[in-house]
Length: 376
Image (tube, rainbow, N blue to C red):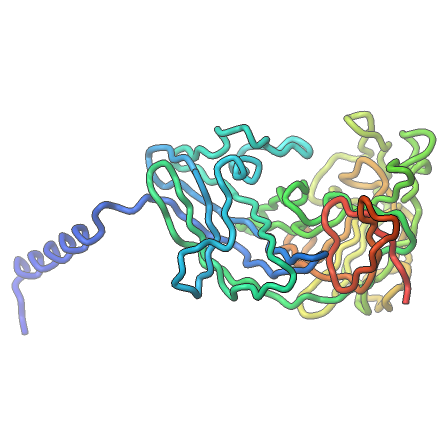
């Protein structure tokens, strides 16, 4: 069959007119995506999905977010499994390109947080809880309600990786899981742009600090040796191979609220301080950061056994007091991977209002928990 150019042009124009008519009124031009699907992890009587939803305004006019609903992508039912209303959203949002100062997190009353300017992108930090015994949907999707319409998109899996069981990275008692998993952790907002893509390597990271009577030190605040965590041994969380070490970075003068002093300028090469990285197998890597210079007992290529001493806690790199920054990622490049959840073999947690610590097995501590590590 042959057609003239004018006939083909008429057919194309008619097709476009039909599509335009079917799409009217036009959809709100918001892009929604989740760069890295989460994996549910247990802690206490709940399980959590921790991930980032990116929302971009492709319109020439601003739009204001009013509510976000998380839905079961495999169900025809429209009831949300989780809902975040306007004021709840304010501290969950990070406007890309706007610097976060220290641990600063927007307050619930800051309604300007929810407005996306033309061409702007916000990151929504989601931490969705479920009952421990609940059967999680295998897939979720997201509905964003705004002052100008609704967009339903961004389907994700809820079991992206296997949860690996690890031994504790430390020993002893009175440890605090500072900036651990949770939406108030500054680790959630440490987005790294490497190789042209955003990554959150510290998504599930914990800054392990030791305290007594809710204080991290005794004596001179500006002496590393005054801190209870300083010099404590850090341990291999599994049988593994050492793939990276860094030593020789001087330690900082500790101190809060700007009273400390960094020993070296911060860069990608220095921010983690002295470090050890273990290859756990299965494209999972454990990072130990801010170690004491001269304390490393391993070198690249060494095979270590679970529980083996790797180094000692220090105060090097981007650190304001002695602590161990521990994380698991999916890339051997330091700060280049996505943070992965894991579960610790066993520990005890001190629960406010209860006289005796509670034993936990195969769970991940949350932000601020007080932990005692126990050996088998």
